[in-house]
Image (cartoon, rainbow, N blue to C red; front, side, top):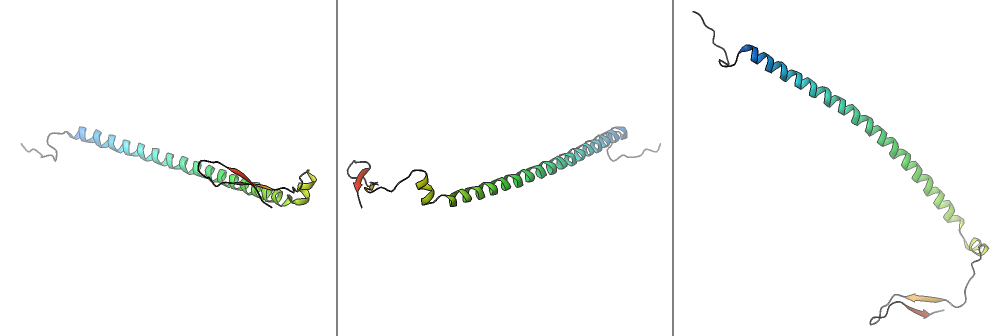
Length: 108
């Protein structure tokens, strides 16, 4: 009687085959999942970069509009809206003296 000695004497070859096949199938499934999630992440990142570019463009437009409107405001425009110079100027002081809040003082 000639008996071969197995590397794993307790576990049968059939059991080892199914365990190895299950492991390979699990690894292939994980590989496909991670490749799919990588592709989705790349697409999402591309969309986000496009949204960032659009937002930066909108911000640039708003800044140029702000600067144009800021430069349009001058003394002549203010007077055309009805603003006038005042003779008696009063300033508010932020100095607090022993519990007093803001005070009005006359200055020329």
